[in-house]
Image 1 (spheres, one colour):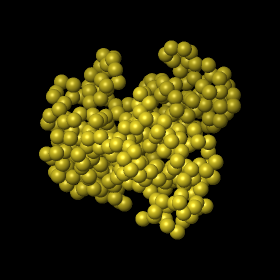
Image 2: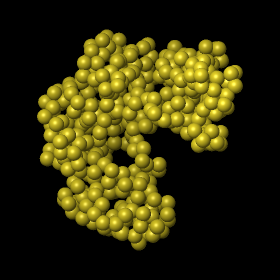
Image 3: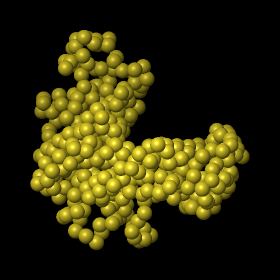
Image 4: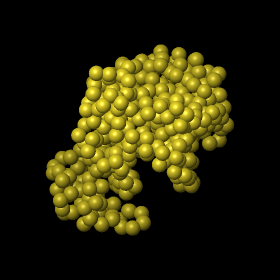
Length: 385
């Protein structure tokens, strides 16, 4: 089911942007719907405009946010943009100043000041994201004109896809009082630790996240893996080019070369290489009993100690990095590497200034090859494999 891979990887498939793929996936919808409904509890939205799988996670993770956004204000702008488009039909056009006036009058809390460059840049990021997702089309003008001047205009066209950007709720969300209310809201009236809801939760955690950890989410999920793990593995390995690994405190779906359901780690980039080297040093510390593994396979260390480990990686292996990372200040290097590790769920930084290292960091590691010196001394090199 190649169409299932595609729907898991993409937000949606718009007929206007890829008609061939749209019809190809529609032809597979019978099988896709059966798997999505029975195993994950995900609904398929299909109409003359698009095909979409509603991918609602069982456990919300930081990496699931919109990576193009860097502030809460951008999320607010995005929500108000969706409100603005609700009353517009497909192919309706509007100019940017109409939207900025609407945002200014509907902005919660403090009013937005479009004379500030920061506010304009944030709105531009939102609009560019909307264009990239196929929610809007630019008919005339360019966003940079608005970045340079608050009076700059752009002509946009509504595609009507905005109506399907947000999920549909079975209850009035005005009754929700905390973020957790949005998680699995369709199952509020059921026993979430048993039966269908538990199966949906486990399949979604494996398919939507880099891994399942014992301490995150419901502990009942590992009871499910204990009794039904072989059946689950057979299901997923039959449909996808993957292998399912189940351990005492964690479980993972390892993608094969033909699997296209999401982003792969490691990627073909320097930050992946740096993280792999960090995992090797983490393993060294554990083997040398400087850091201790807990019963749930996690390792909890003080944040300063963890940051020293990242600095050590830069000192030992930095000559093999690209110029940008070689010359980067230590503090910035630590921040970028830590954020990348947290996004991939290798670690979690806690408010108590502790860092939880998850067992996924122990499954993979990186080494320089023996014949690659990269300007290092023999003592600085790691043994190649």
